[in-house]
Image 1 (cartoon, rainbow, N blue to C red):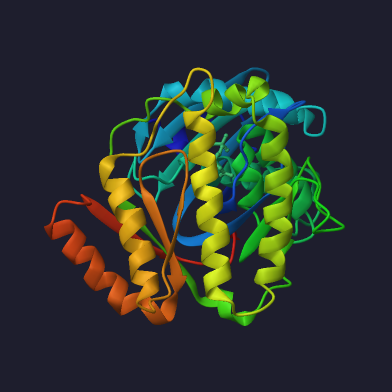
Image 2: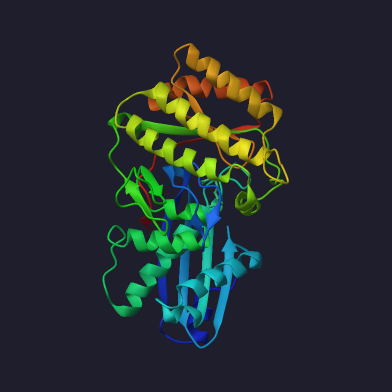
Amino acid sequence: MIPFMSMQTQTSTNMFKAKYSAPSNIALIKYWGKKDFQKPINPSISMTLKNCSTETEITYIPGEKLEIEFYLKDKKEPSFITKIEKLFGQMESEFPWIKKGRFEIHSNNSFPHSSGIASSASGMAAIVLCIFDINAQIKKIPFDLVNEAKRISEYARLGSGSAARSVYPFFSIWGKTKASEISQDSYAVGYNNFSDFFKSFCDTILIVNKDKKSVSSSEGHSLMDTHPYKEVRISEANRKLITLIEIMKSDDFSSFAECIEQEALELHSLMMTSNPSFILLEPESIRLIKEIRDLRKTGKKVSFTIDAGPNIHLIYPKSEFNSVKELCEIWQKENVIIDFIHDEIGMGPFKI
Ligand code: PMV
């Protein structure tokens, strides 16, 4: 690792630094399929997580040539640089200094790799936040994260679609929908009009498989371009988002559970019926889905959602935490899951 001091003496006395933590998020109505440039074909809503986050520090020294060094957990990772250069290229018209100078980027995820949590959402949001902060330092203007949230979301979206939703506390909506007057395809907005019941919600990630996904999210998104059910999907996602928002105005857990579970299974049905077809669920995923539904019949307030992978996100109010903990230990003992990560609803990004 090149120490910062040597960077400083090498080039100029101007050095700018910013450090932010940005959360991951779990979609309840999923973004699946793109249009135009990294815009969603359907609206999505997500819950911001608290523990699963990325901390990123950027040190910038103005110069003539663009140089980027990227470290993940203090280990140099040149493979990330192409994506970051691409993002910087997209930010250049508003931040002309971004293509000139030396960047040292240190990133650290609080969650393990291949845990069913994509680091691209929190990672891209954290980078964009640092860039906004450094821009304010260079121009000697104030920077307020809350006031700038939409623009941060817009740039984070260019880095990774779901990153658009990693900028707000509690819940975010991304994509035009009749459920919100202010939501847009180009950025996400915070969603606040929900019952207090949902403020205590948790997400325990049940890890059934840590292998790399056989089909990436990008490939999955592009298979939607020619999907035979594309139009039905768009109208169903819109319908479900409106339904879910109505449900979340009251404390109706069973309707909430039915809606998010139907959505998770719809996502996986789309994968199974695309051309080529693919299946990301494992036998253990199906077993968990059935058990969670059976548990609900016994009165437990537990539900699931699933992203583009085999791992199950158990979504529940905090009052169920102790029984979920016991269940996880049993599932682990019975080799249904190999690990689990507890998380809960979060308050959004912050400066460190
Ligand atoms: O942001 P991407 O391109 O990794 O896509 C995310 C896709 C899902 O996680 C399956 C759904 C979502 O809305 O987050």
